[in-house]
Image (cartoon, rainbow, N blue to C red):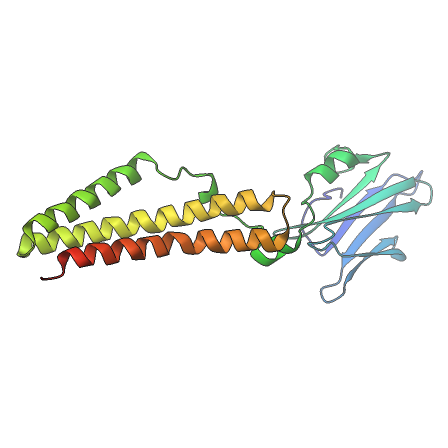
Length: 224
């Protein structure tokens, strides 16, 4: 049972050790900060659970008759991931120990821990795709038409259309732009406090800018 990457609380490997195979068992205790390793139901080691600060934990385990194996623990979004290596090669998929380490999540600094690593797919989206640009143009044309008409049913309808389209464009652009900035800041080498301040500034700058534009537009429609 060498399904080493299956996310379960108890993971088993059958290791070749002469005529009698050995069972290497990794058991995760829910409320414990450690993970226990057993050989044929006999405890041989206890490793700390991977954390966001230390996402990669390894230990060399001597298996009677089967030599030394390396147990590597890492953390995935769905839970604990455990792999066993023999002579530097994974028993699950043949990857090298170095490759598995490179594939593991990097340590999280204070900024990443405060803001979270999870960045939605919008961070890879274009800020202004064609449909967003078209919606923005229609919103501006609608509001411009309302400014010309000033009053009447048609003017009110144009304001409604322009407001809805403008809101959709604003929220979508705000989310994508903030996510892109956040993705860049995660890999920035400046201090965590400076990066967090930059993220907050970007997050607030867009809605404050929209508020300013709204006030200016409202002043135009204000009766004289």
